[in-house]
Amino acid sequence: MAAPARAPAQDFATDVMTGYALAGHDPVAYFIDRRPREGRPDHEVRWGESVWVFLNEGNRAAFEADPRTYAPAFAGCDPYALAAGFTTAGKPQLFALNGRRLLLFHSEINRFLFLADPRTYLAAAEDNAERLGCLAP
Image: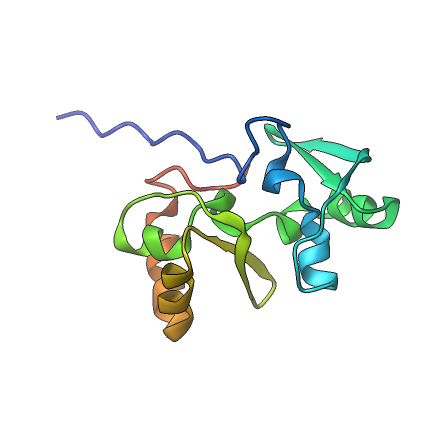
């Protein structure tokens, strides 16, 4: 029996209208301001298959130096759903910072449940991420 095909990679919550990852929010701002902030098209960079926008040149430079630090973990997949064995895209407005990782959630309840036991859910999400196509480039 053939191994199942790997699920298609997620897209870092890319907005279908603009084409911007995180629906146009600056990934570095989550760590600096502790909230999503709109990026500007004059500060954009392509990483992986996505276009990212930033508030300023400094945030852009920080991302370019180490994109895996600032890009959402699990390529934007909801870690609570991943822990349960399925994928659903996270939303840029529903996030948590766990250590040095930006996590996006599909719903408030998923975020709440994840934060009740992050160590357990994070380990399970990591176990399922590759099989379900939720890895960063």
